[in-house]
Image (tube, rainbow, N blue to C red; front, side):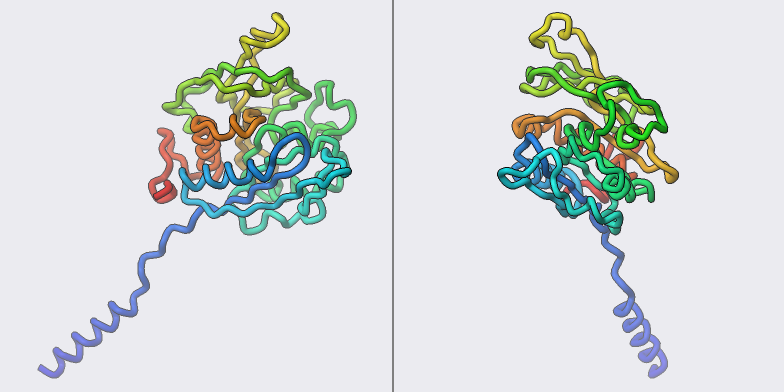
Length: 280
């Protein structure tokens, strides 16, 4: 009887000491923002709130909002001198507008995490950043001024006036767009496409109310995926959402959240967010 009690006590202690099942850690998201032409304090709040409503995420921000008199198209982002800025994060969301930042050393630092395999999500003016040389002319892979475009996936040189964009799903089988339908935005900017670097187009758009009649039927890719660098890092990009009103649209935030989930490997083939990473 004494031996039975001793064994029972030992088992009880063993179970008590057993560690609890490990809780799923949130996706660690770093949002880079700041620069020209947008209300980035508002956009930071919109993106963080929108992602947390859809995914189990931990959001950090790295930003610089130019002061009056500073060159807004060359924001003094802290990452410009820190190639290790992405360490410890599962994905980096680029939402900066650094259109005139052309220093190759800065670009080395910005691209360093993605060269090491950290996934990227790129929003709107990120596609018009880090430009140099004759960037309004099509570039080719390997050109000195093609490096950023090779990372984001599509070279864009500009856009027309703001007006609603009619969006169509280009790849209904891709996990990001699986089950999604096209929609029409509020007034937004339709970015042109000059060169594509092995992308998978997901969504295309036209502007039926464009000022110039000949531009009303021009169709451009506005959301896509591809892989980048020696580690084949997953990259999702969308040129949508110039205005905060665009960014608050549920369809847009759904798209970005699915892009984050796909980039980090938490979106199933049938387009469902892994239950462990869905917002509670």
